[in-house]
Length: 73
Length: 468
Image (cartoon, rainbow over all chains, first blue to last red; front, side, top):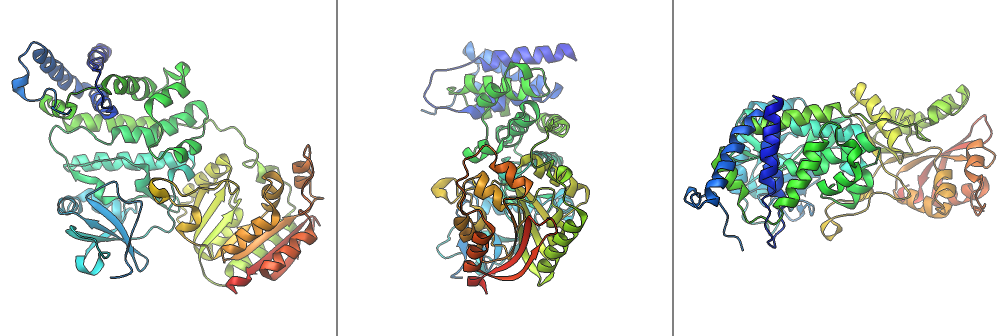
C-alpha cells in the first residue's frame, strides 16, 4: 500500500510539472489532476493510462487518440 | 405576474434562476436543467434527504403562473420551501461550516450511487433550519457523464476545507477571509498561512500543498485536462474514494478552543438568582405578549434568552460577535436538536455588508428579514464604550428595525462597565442612565421598565413610535 502511494505520488508530481508558458490561467486543471492521486488505488490505473497517453503524444503518436492539447488560443 | 422579482444573487448558474413571488421562492429551469431535475426527483436519495429535512422540498409549478416579466427561455419552474432566515458561511461557526461540508459530501456520495453528481460545491448552497443544515440548490445536481471528474472539488476546498483547516490547525478565523472573498480561500494562500509546521497534519500535503503546486504548474497549460481524464478512464470510484476520505478528514477536524472573553461570560458572571429570574420573566412577558415571526437576540452569548424567545417566536436568530460563544451555543442547540434558533457570528459594530456583483449577491442582515422582536441585553455598553458608537446612533438603528425591543442598560457603577472604562479616556458623556432614558423615550414608547435588584442594571420593553 505504501509503495502504491509513493508510485502514485511520483507519477502525479511528474504530471503536474508539465507546465507551459501560455496566457490563460486555469487553476481548475491542476485540481482535476490532483483527484487522480486522491482517488486511492482506483486512481492509479487511470493515472498510468493518462501518463502513457502523454508519453505517446510526446513521441508523436498520441494526437490520433484525440485527447491531447486543445485548440484554445 | 407583475410582482415576481429575480434574485439578483442567483446568476452564476445559467441553467437556473431563483426568483420570488408573494413571499415564496421559485427557481426557473432551462430545458437542460429540467431534464436534470427530473432525474434528481426520481432518485431514492432525493426523497430520503428531503424527508430528513436536509434538502429543500421542491415542487414543479405551472411555468406561466410563476415567471417574472421579461423572463424568457425557461422550460419549467419549481417552488421551494423557504428557509426561515438566509445566512452566509462567513456568519457560521466552525461546527456549522463543518456540518455543512459533511452534508455536501454526503449528498455527493449518495448522488454518485444513483448516477448523478454535483457540478459545484458552494457553501452558499447550504442554509439552516435552526441547527439543521439544508441543501437548497437542486440545480447543482446533474447526471454524471462517464469520465468526468468532480468539478466542484476545488470549490469545496476553497469554501469548506481550507477555512476549516485554518481554524483547526492554526486557530485563524475564516470569517474575515470568506467575507473578503466570496470565492473563498485559494490553495496557495492557505498553504502560506498553514506553513510547513502543519505539513504532516491530515489533508495538508495532498489537498493543500499538492493542489497548490498542481494549480501553479497547470495554470498555463493548453491541455484539455477534462478530455484527457475522460480518455484515460476517470470513473466514479475515484470521486467516491476522494469524497469518503474528505468526509473522514472533515469529520475529524477539531478546533482547539481557547477560552474567549464572552464564551466564559455566563460561567464567570455572577448574576444573582433573583436578577436572573427577574430578567427571564421580563423577556418572557415581552416575547409572549403576541406571536412573533422573527426574533433577534443581539449579543446572545450562551443563548439563555434566545431560548426564552424561542418559545414565542417561529424563528430566533441568535447573534454574537464572539466566535467561540456562538460555536458553543451551536453545539448545545445541535445536541438539543433545536430547529428554531439559528446562531450566527456577527459583530454589530462591523456587520455583514452587501457584497458581490453590484453589491447585490450577498445581503446585509436587515435585507434578509426584519425582526418583530429584538433582545438587546447587556450589549449597549459594549457598543457605546467598547466600539465608540454614539448612543443616539445605536438607538436610531435599533428603533429603525420597527420591532418590539427588550433592552438592558448597565450603569457606570456596574463592574462590567468599570472594567470597560479602565485604561480608556472617558469620552462617553452620553453613557448615562438619564441620557439613555431620554433618548429611548424620544424614539419609543416604553411599555415596561424594571430595575434589577443589583441596582446597576435596568430593563426596558420598548416599542418604536414608527411601529406603534
